[in-house]
Length: 366
Image (cartoon, rainbow, N blue to C red; front, side, top):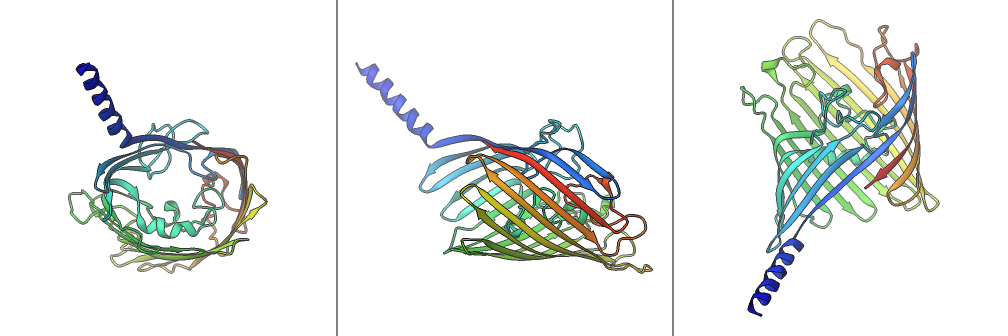
């Protein structure tokens, strides 16, 4: 009898401990057909057009007294060919699964949350949410596109802090150790502040990413970024807008002190249609200028219009369609200029500097 009672007590204690911790598998499977018209036509099956395809594991353990431990491992996927070359700089076709989207461990409580590892920055999260297309797919703004601007939405070898919510106000910060021979190389410092109260939403972000001078990195030398955005939900529609400016000092294309600036202004709207649909529309204006010794570099300008529709078949599954048009106002004779987010380089630009894109697909979350 005593052994039975002891066994029951052990099982009860074990059950209580198990109830205090959990691990969840989650992900997004998103694929569709993309068509791009520029100098040439390009079409094919592409992944992550509405939401980036991914697979992840997240877990939490209740340590008592309001303190919790957590972890997250998240990898990008390309559904069109099955590889893991998604969500990080340097990804190339055929790469296997890598937890490059997020890989963190941390503690959270009344003080906020502290995490260590690789993560999306607070600055990016504070303002990119004002892109009506969620910084994903052919309709997305180029403001946070690393290929066009050198901007990195993630930092690694980093420590992050996120404050508690103070009546809608939160602040986050990251410090990324460069871990290079020269201590300041590849070092990242960023701040993000948000305010969300009822229909009003505000965001402000700052980033500073040092270049890798020992390896002569071009295009990411001392990149400093400011951006801010806002949104207001009227019920029948949600209006949003943002401004972002990046300055790449000592850009590696000329003498010390040379710089390149990239500015983006964006406006967007989302509106529900019936019980299951949503319309999205946005306008983005881009302006790139350079101050390079010995060169007369004109200011490059471009405008982008995007229109999309998402139809939810269930809470997890949706069909979507997106059309985008981008026009470079002063494309040079070498066919150089901005291209739509995720557009295949082979499509190029028309003689007038324009590019059209269309995506239709299906998204499932699990």
